[in-house]
Image (cartoon, rainbow, N blue to C red; front, top):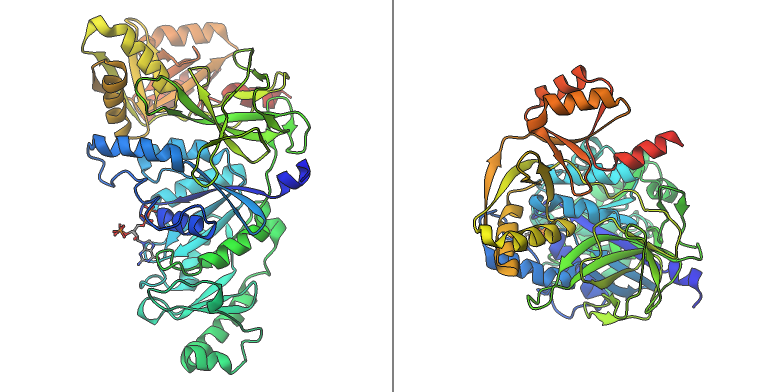
Length: 535
Ligand code: G4P
């Protein structure tokens, strides 16, 4: 197979949802179809309990299992499918946002009873920002929920995207009879506790066919005819280009738990979803077909074996062909590196690979060279954009409980920050360490891991900050004046950039008004933003 064919057959996507909508169950069913797992239950444990209480075993278990299940690759219908798992827990939202930089499309799971939930909206915002093509799977049709047309309206309104149903449910809850595939004009009848696999699908080209009445009953058949007519009247025909541009989201209905409506979605996904796409760098757009290899690190995972400090860096390949044992350029460090044991994630079986193609995600063993967002390529000096740090929402000062172990603590903190667990801001005077996260759970993770992996004990003292803003200015005088006036609220991030820790929205607005020549950036990607504006 030539390189272009290799690229064309890859489909790299993420499944996202508000917790409990059914992401794990759906992922599992997709893996079953792909033969990547033999029985249900294998992915199930990859979840932190919903209560955000301390359960260290759970955190450990999550870390252990998520190496294996962060990326799941399998072959289906002549395609190589790469599913990137995202943590559902809101405290790990930043991890999810970063993972979304490595996918080419997304399947968004929505619970038919709950509709669009808080996390669904936030995730969709990120997809909209990146113009990521989205497919929506409305789950739990075996339960009573919102009326389908109302739900479609809610999706359009709250997710700010046009929708186009491609399958349609016949009833729901106790009256759920099955789904009609609008795309292929066939019918799949639902029987509880039975999987809706292909043999059950009946082709109904023409809905006037009296066979439909026999199959679902006259009332349900008439209702379906009416609704399909309405769909065709209200919604434009499905436009693949609009989907690929992120303007229209096709909608599927089903029940992941009953494995119903899943195959219809997967088959359609294989036909319409995008093959690997290019990515922006600070210099130019890199396309998958480009000859030279390039890729970026979007996730770093500590190795589970405490005797080894190795970590696994997850690299998304953007262009060219990655070869084992070949020297590549680590752009940030300006250093040549080669990788003797790159791993693939085929069928959960981590095995060493010799080469990998655009769209693939590979695991690189790393002893501390990588940070999230790092670019690897064949020597050019460009870096991939789009992996910024966002302002954290919770801030705590880190206090060392064992002053003799300051070194271990520093090393541990540095490594955890490289992994993207949280963000560190150093405040002068006194070199105070302020840790910022998006959720409470990260502090427990940090505390636990510092103690167990680095033998360092610490405690956290809450700080009353509302936002961290990266600040820049061309007016040195004003910047100096600001730094002097706000000395207690100025810190430096891991790359020595200046950060203003604002206590309230009001104080931030005041600062913006009083110092008009200082720019307060909401994400750490301001350097690239500024360069883009200049060019
Ligand atoms: P998540 O990863 O998005 O958090 O959701 P997950 O798949 O774990 O599903 C959340 C709950 O919803 C689970 O129940 C799961 O069994 C159930 N569920 C998933 N799909 C369907 C469906 O199509 N129909 C119905 N009725 N339920 C569904 P749980 O009680 O939390 O867990 P479990 O005891 O079933 O493991």
